[in-house]
Image (cartoon, rainbow, N blue to C red):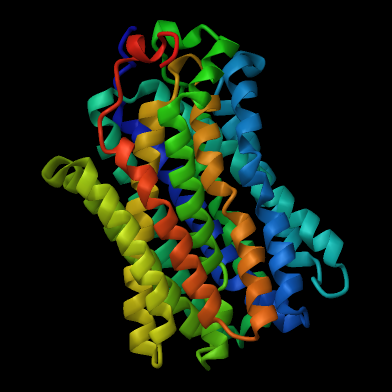
Length: 409
């Protein structure tokens, strides 16, 4: 198998910028969209359903993979034109959300949210495919750590800034201004994608083979999918409902939501940044164990919150564990992806963590059913612990591609 093309600095800037814009949009969706709908008069369970529907394109984004792997759009490349298309779809959806009242036109609001996230899924999948195409194996952990750190740092800065801005504007009902700003920020990566040429790929990754999808049913891949699905389900269920939980505790100002969301995202950046160093120092087994136990502890710790400083501290710990696990899973998925269908197979692995959007609705319904947050938090922590046994086989480096391709592997 030929070696991937060397990753140039300009392309790394493009990838980091795309991840940063993702961070901004996700920061809005997870921290401010729910209070915005709540302010409009919707109940928690309805809000959870809308949010889950809006995020479903992230579950189905693997469908973009074969399109990107197979089609050189207008001769402009397999990745770059789809990235630009996705950015335009995202901007259109965000602008539409700013113009539609969620209470009066809930279906239209949900459809526009789906459009925005569909655009995100397009450029996210194609960006990841390009990263797999051109990143040498020895640089994978470092590159994934950098990209996830970019996303989380952007989310930290804009969650804090959006929260302060929203407080100055007068509360959650004024969140339309944040949507306009998020749409405007899409212009920077779109311009970069238009200016840069698509980097050349190794000769063998140009050979599109449906048989490459067989990587998904290997034993190691199934363990990886189980690990990602369980930690992601619990993590998203918690993350997506924390803004409403803070409101229940009396931390309901836009500034509070922004500061506490920034604490979580700063923790994510720290966790993603530390992951590559930890892999080289303490090894896979310890890194996987820390990821599972750390996330379960941070989730259950949310039940102990009684003040804003405690919410900030446990939010940081939850973010650090989530960022650590996200970067770790992305590294393992990148390692497992088949280069013959890089975008498709990597997106399929990552899609299992995006199934976590179901966790949002499940957690919200648990809150409505039990009329409290404590039991849903503890249940989410247990779900994370169920993922622990699946990390044991993942603690060993994968076999060579030739061995994996052998019958019965």
